[in-house]
Length: 325
Image (cartoon, rainbow, N blue to C red):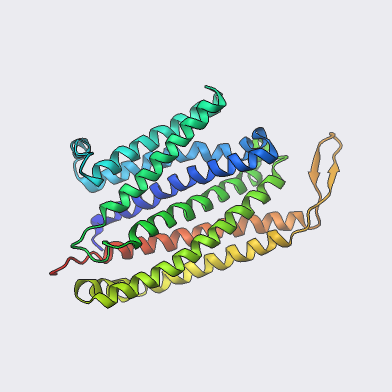
């Protein structure tokens, strides 16, 4: 991989994670809010919401390093009707503006609930259009490794896998870090466990999709010969031990999520015990131990799979072999 592609690795991973986190956070907010109440869900989900826009801005700023001259982005946008790169820039900026605007409006209680939902929906659509445009940039007929159905599929899998795990880490932080817990924790523990069940189950499905896509994609490239076969060789062996490390991290992260999901499903709900202040809290046997397991399991799985996705993206750029190389 050319070192000039490093900003693209960071940009694509961060941007996809931001979009995924916004969509997943919104889905959890809608469905969990019906059962637990919007105010309680806000306590848990707001910190993640406030972080998404700034992370996307950082990702866009990093992407400018690949352009050389940032002013080129302005000229590129003029070709929106014919260029996927133009659409990527426009939709990416629209998503960043929408995410920041929605977080501010939501936090300050501006607009009606319907107007806020409309803004959130438009922002999510901008984000998904951004991911699709980003993937289509690489669907180039002269580069067999990129000119594949696997490119958009893998980009969207990364989007929702890292996005959901990032939201899970944020939810755990909200109920664990003393400063955040004082403001957002408290009565959100049952909601946290419910949300982590959904996130863990979704992550396992996405890992399953990725486990099928990657070998199928590599075998398909190998069977075509020429530049495609050379790309497959680079994906599997050209990076030395990179592919092996990627797979080790992938399976370790998946195993940890599966173990954590098993613990959540096997967990016996605790009774609600009144405190001296009249408040209630969960008093299940082993709650302290479960809380510790929760922190380490979710955080470690996120780090392992983030590292795996970064290595996979490095291999993606390494396989940049043109027909007639």
